[in-house]
Length: 304
Image (cartoon, rainbow, N blue to C red; front, side):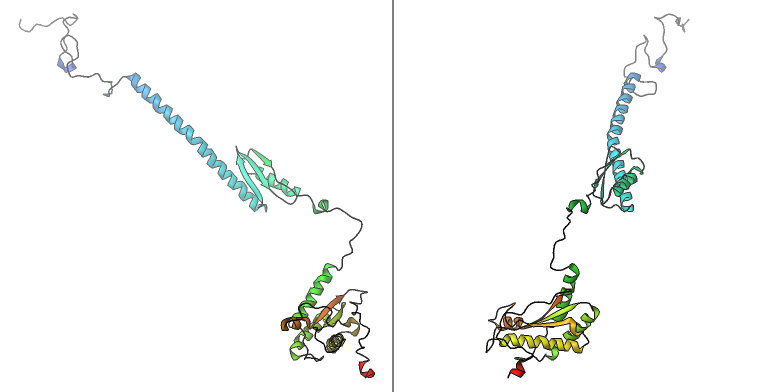
């Protein structure tokens, strides 16, 4: 027979043909490679190793991103608590968040506000604990030592304010006189009107009107006399505007109390002035300068 077949059970006679990629004796044909069932190179153990490496790097990447996410969340919590402090009327409270614990720093006025800040912080979501470091200053009474004696101050604050207002009314513009006499200039009329109005609004105060001159004088005592009659001229004008007589006293100081030099025109002009001194109850004002040779303004005409 020309077409004999070998017994397939014989190991030496097996032949499956090139369709299966094998040679006669069960060896791989030249050029063929070993492949996985899916047609990809490598064994199943190789693929398992690749999967393990990929999973390892994925875990590393996810683990490195977690602190950043946590920090971002803590920053959001800090902003939330800080906004809650502002809404609660506590803008001076400084907020920090560490490991989801809120730390409160700053200064508040009372212990009640400190406790309220702690409650506001703890009421926010995701807050684990609150460290309240707010500072409450001690009361002012605890800082000032108590004393049974009251210091004898020259004037109360109310008197100082009244004196400042009185001086301001009389200073713009200051009262001026014609040269060498007691005639008040027309430019001084508005100041006299304001002075009368001020005394009308303050009906309980008394005022001493003090006249001053520069150092120029022909005879000794002329400046003292001139300052006295000028102070009386101002009192007369205020009486004409309705101010009560017992509220106004006068004094002439001459050139005994200058506020500028007496060498220049500007200095002399500053020294020629009228001042108004507020008198507290029981006060009579400044005493006149000692000079017994000066004639009395009220009796000077009679002595001539």
